[in-house]
Image (cartoon, rainbow, N blue to C red; front, side, top):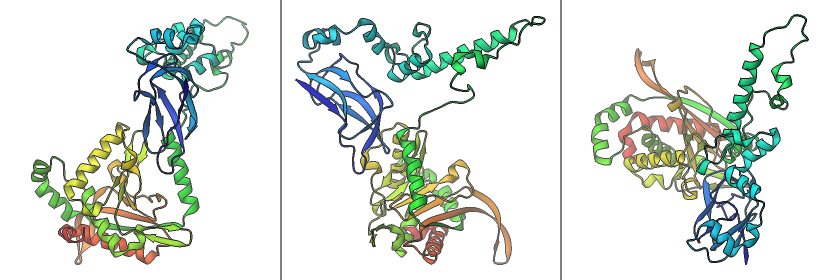
Length: 416
């Protein structure tokens, strides 16, 4: 009996995904619960597991294909997928696979679908390519590396040809080499990941559907830095994590949100939904793109719990193991461009949220205190807000309240 392998439900509001890789090939025997392939969504990656025991008879959606929830990815023939090797299982359970053209079957095992498309497009001999993928499979990167090597060798050959008197003009390498027919070697076309495409779409959506403004202030970080200096060793020894800036700003943001609840709200039609809980998103710049995992009920978390959770999120974002639970929801977001050296920026809203706080680089600057000039570690902070429900006065006062809490960190124990 044949069973379709379909795209499962991927979570609230997620309807599309991209096939990243198949762990199995046509003809492979699989067991219930065994991972078949990996999908990338706008928020996290998922593995699709076998719901039945049997043999994969058809792979319909290849690597880099975009798919929707419920769409068929492949076909599995139900049967007793014992501990026998895939070839033995194919003979017993799916004899029709045995009749598959041998060269085609070897090609499927030897090269990924994306790499195969390149090979066919440029008529490349795969026997000259060393595969670096699992089990020696040829990947897209292997093909592109081979193409680049051929181009460089062609250029070297062209450069050492001795000129002949009255010889006709030499056709340039770019004109004569078929690899140049459709692209310039100085360019590289890379398909955006599902996450990057989502980031682009949501950023455009935020700019087009919200009345976004940004207001700025600056904070004297002296008190926080001195407190961290005094307590950092004892804090790390006790909790196993460093006392960073994130926990101070999460706590201070919650205190300011309590004073100005409209910034912890969202718009639903003609209604304003004010959240009396504080799920704070913390933007993390992972290699695959920006992700915003959420500290759920952050007002009930200690400094140590916040720091531990953010560290966990950072590791999971790099390993692509963030779960839906990690990234769903959020009532307010904090993003820190200062870790990359940014002195000032205007953060973009994360709809449907109506407020996002931008932190920046701490820099020694001269400031006037009680009529005298002093050098202080200062940070510019920015609040972008949706002017449809947040007035400029509230936005400015929010930052003033945040500033007061950060400059008097002991008050965070009461306000946070």
